[in-house]
Length: 181
Image 1 (spheres, helix red, strand yellow):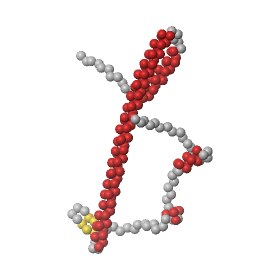
Image 2 (tube, one colour):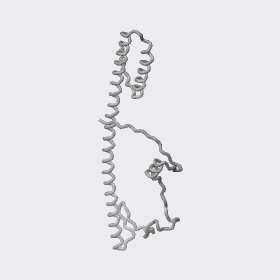
Image 3 (cartoon, helix red, strand yellow):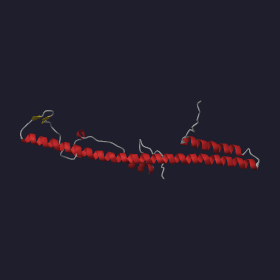
Image 4 (cartoon, rainbow, N blue to C red):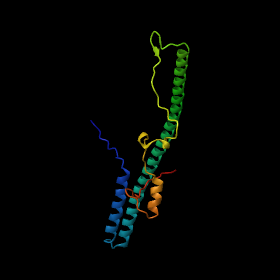
């Protein structure tokens, strides 16, 4: 014999908000048709009880979002700390690589060797030409410069708020939510 157990489904915040709207609409639509004061009082009490229950669900749902957001923010901070630590270790390792290569290059140049063979690795001095710019890049001819264009959003915002027109830009209202304990 199998026993069927019905597990209540959790509602989403949107479903809870829709349920509140539907309850308030039903209250407004039905209240006008009740003429008996005792019946109206019972109806209003039932509606208040249902609204209280739904608002409790709403509060629990927001608490759940708040707890999850707190956990995710802590995780993000932890990962940021780890990232900074790893970036610092990478920089240290890169610097060590550069020092070791400079040491090998110095030793090979000092003894006039172009190649040293090990059992696994071979060190070679490679010759190349590097470009060294000795003046401020702004003073170079435009054909030898790269210019990076990016919007100055603070200046654009200030201009738009002052009533000026900025071609290709507009103020767009945004909203965000904050959930604090």
